[in-house]
Length: 231
Image (cartoon, rainbow, N blue to C red; front, side, top):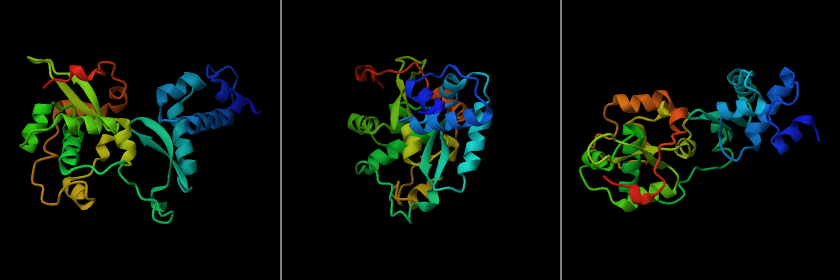
């Protein structure tokens, strides 16, 4: 087994070896390929050495794969290999939702995506109707939303935000790549008759998330116990 492959298999990522540039590039490629989930720059740095310019190597790898059948893509500050977008029809691959979502679930997901971090009452205010706990539970089960930080207001309601899985499922590199309302209707993600202000304006809090997604996906201030869900 090669030195690089052995290092990946044994998780000996403390830069044990004096890697040359070619080996570093191959090791980073192997780390991303071997990971079951998209990996961050910070995680890769831990495995190849803090002195390595990981972003530059990632960019070089992206250039290498640009014209190939698989691409190295970014998903909210995390990296993974995915089949090239333009080959979907030739491979007869269709991206299908894991389960059929109701209109209410899709609208709720869209509101969270565009207004995150957003509380349940805020979602209801935008939609104009109540949001059932079952709808939020369903979106959590799919792995597309998660609990965010509590609002520092009376009652300290929890907020909702999207996840890396959401970006990956919809082929988005970052939240800034979210489509416009008409594009969502054309893609069948929203009822064509929907007139609610799902996109609306970007709040300072939402803009902060758009600008610093990787850190947000590492929030430690989350609430894993569903009994904590209020508001």
